[in-house]
Amino acid sequence: MMKRTVSQNLSYIGAGIGLALFALFGLLYGSFIGGVIGINISGAIFGAPVAPGIFPRIIVAVGMLSGILLAAVICVAGTASLGYLIGLVIDPEAWREKKTGSNEAVNNH
Image 1 (cartoon, rainbow, N blue to C red):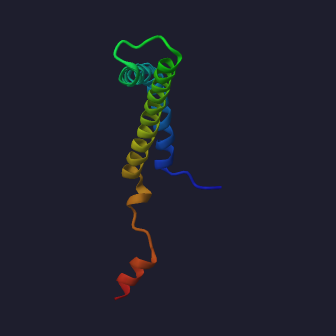
Image 2: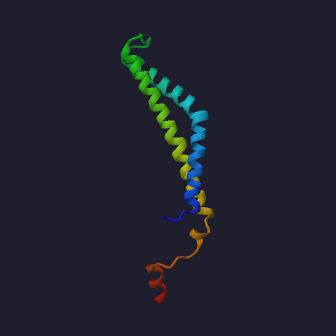
Image 3: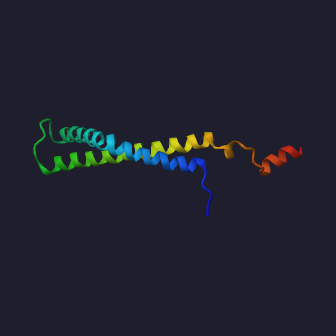
């Protein structure tokens, strides 16, 4: 069984916080911004007043889904990475000098 480190535990905590932030903010704003981008792309392809056809709606739906997925990746992966980095900074094991082959080679000469 692998030993859990402070950085790994804080990474999990950061991912949980990121998931909560995504549920509170990222879902709504990601779909809104992705939908606006989809409307702009659809307007560029099919003309400025977008007709209520199936293809413009598909483009807007894909834009909304991609906005939601991008918001999820940014929220969860960003806070997990931030938690991991904070764990590396405060972990006492990371600051302790470890014996490696390169350290021994330097000390022998």
